Length: 149
Image 1: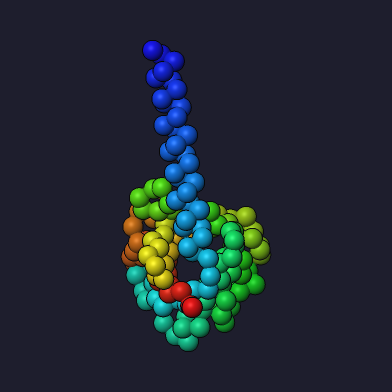
Image 2: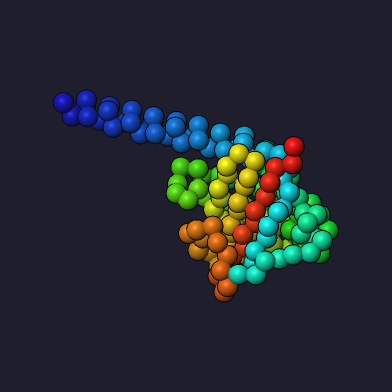
């Protein structure tokens, strides 16, 4: 009887892990492409201007590369990322792959729905955001993106 319960428990765990891998793969595939920044909020303030209008995020494989005319391009021009769509909210970690802060991990959350993607990340501190918002004094940035077809 104990063996039967142990096998049931192991099978349930393996099936759960396989389903989590499927979700991660689905989101990993769905997030690929070039995204245009249509909204950018930093600590409660909407960031406007031509530089934001021209910003894009290119996602290929497990890398993210912002494109556009912004002063920190060299320093923050490439990230690797990992998704976990099995949580609520869905989480991602971005690791800076270049510059003085190479290896720094930014913890965030995301929401992907069709051709719309929202990313919320904490720029200061290590506590992952709990919701898709960037209120004043929060240390959070919220980017709203649309896929470029």
